[in-house]
Image 1: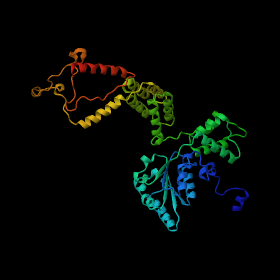
Image 2: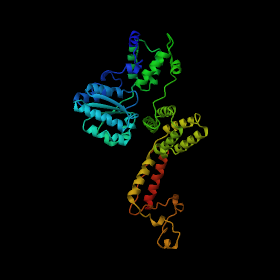
Image 3: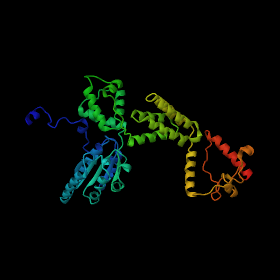
Image 4: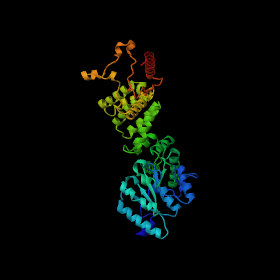
Length: 435
């Protein structure tokens, strides 16, 4: 039977995916990670020093984490062992550790690559500590989640975190050129469709090669696809986005900062990306309310009104019609004058209240519902502001031991320009009236 396979030119193991056939055989071939494996890259420098130490590879899927780990083992003459936190438990790890200890007695080191390491719980992560400390293994863990949150401090203190970046368009384009050379044929795309294809990969090299295989299989003889045919053929790839993980937090951070930075176009872009990836519009509505009170505040008091109205409109209309109300709000907030003066004032007031403790307000501004309280001076000397000129008495309302404080300092822009004028006027009257 083996002769039959050989005569037919077939591999008994079956066809290998393009991504596997194009897997780099040297660190210099790894696409899009020059900051790690380039001439001055972090890993290059470590290899030149003769020791790499344990590391955590953090980055999106398809950026080369597994490939680099394999190549590191070859570069350092370590035995490569691979496991996954999805399929392994503490018992499986102990077997791997015992094998590594046996190798060590023979003078061989072990590079243990753990995929999805963030899926191990704290106890399982702690199991790595002794074998990392005594040099039984060099651990390389791969994670798509932020290690600061996904891994415990003890493990992180023993490993260096190396960040893998999404492949940029140039790196994806270079990868496709290599794929075309290997296959001996170009992708059946015109120039505009090729650019769209690169965007579809969303920074994932493995996905780009998988999509390329799909494209070659789907293309008719001699066909050159345009963008419309490409989108129909591939049925589009879902964006890399996990509503419970980094994609979610990265994009909402980008949305918040572009609103704060008064860039409505960029804000709309991130808003649309989150909706396109399946984000709950109600979450976005809540965040818009937060932006209105934190970053706009009293510079435009209508911002909060607009955010609440947009949220209500979405509840009334639902998706997708109600999303336009939220988009309107994004534009309004990004275009509004900005002020965090109320936010800063509130935080300062909270801090002072905690530090000051239970100081008694002046008795003049306390009610005296009983005869005894009147005898004790409660309410005595209170000046009723509506009876004073300009409806302003200028009375001192602060606890005597604390003295007057200044928390709110409105900027001279938006509606707060008018608020500042009022405060300055009252401060002038207060000085004149000795309050």
